[in-house]
Length: 522
Ligand code: KIV
Ligand code: ZN
Image (tube, rainbow, N blue to C red):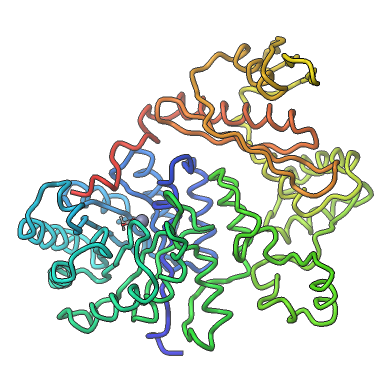
């Protein structure tokens, strides 16, 4: 397969994905996701928007330093200060890239209040500046799909002449459709002087549910870079989902004869990790990585599957990193079996860590007849809290609930090593529990999201609870799993509080608060 058939996978989970309100990730979480993307074979990682905050700058710098194979890219608006800051962060990578952009559509041109000529000059100056710093420069006309054709072609030509090596065509508001997406790229390549010397990229948003189709159509039109995120994470309806475009090209190579460097068996694990650290659950029927994507429940389907898996399956679960059976073990399973099952699920544990997890696994197995893979994953997520986030701990909880309001919670928290107890009332057991936490540890954080998912079937199933809290623009997500939903809720709430406290106290007060947005494109 020739190079012209290689489609570059540009992952922007850590930039466009993380920009999604509430999807904020901690520094360590960003590093972990970047490592996983690199190991999976992503060609380019857009690690953040360095000028946006001290936190973004630190994360992009660190990711650049530890990157192994992937090109590390940072985003910058069309001004020298942004571009310099971006270069400061990405220059540590073995293969750095500067990505600079400006909104070219009539609506976006009005924001910096530039005439077409003034904007054209700005593009020339900024791309030239970026190219003087770095030999790998990507330029994007934001809202390209709503930009007048003549002006789009003119600006693309200017960027190419100024030294851009990749031209990205964003469908910023998810407005285009497959035919149009293909045609736009085809026409740019055919008509813009110099187009043959650069790679065209496609960057689609999913507002009309067409991001995957639009990205693949753009490839048909000649684009050779797809910008995407894990689980389609991103603002509003999200971005093109990496797992969808990669599997579509793999499964339908007959009509889409393109190759990527992605090890698809790592898709499931990274999907779960991104879901955990972002606090954005993956919908059950999500293509490729949804819980039901390979589940066959109806009688006809099961019968067909037993005779020949291809009856209803166009790809094998193993292709995306799902093992054949979800049933794992029970209370008689030993430590070695647990270690090997966790390894299969992508968790490689040291001896001490395994010891802790084993104790918790036994406790869970005592409460549940069968422990499934999903239970183990939930257990691992719960384990991840880490000492740093352990300042406040739930020691005891008893709730009184029933038809008679108000419900009450009797709670003991250990705060900085000291136990404190209170009883609080609320509108339901969870509300009462959260009120009790606030009484013992007063705070101003606002609850932004409270989500409960049953990990498996049955009344003994564990509940995974996600809680998102916000304090002065800083957002933290906490998660926990337990067979008791209220206990899981209390622990998730306390976990989010711990994270907020650590961020408030340990970091520069502005470290993870975004100072600018990519929407201020001028
Ligand atoms: O959607 C968009 O236009 C973007 C640009 C910054 C590339 O994310
Ligand atoms: Zn975008």
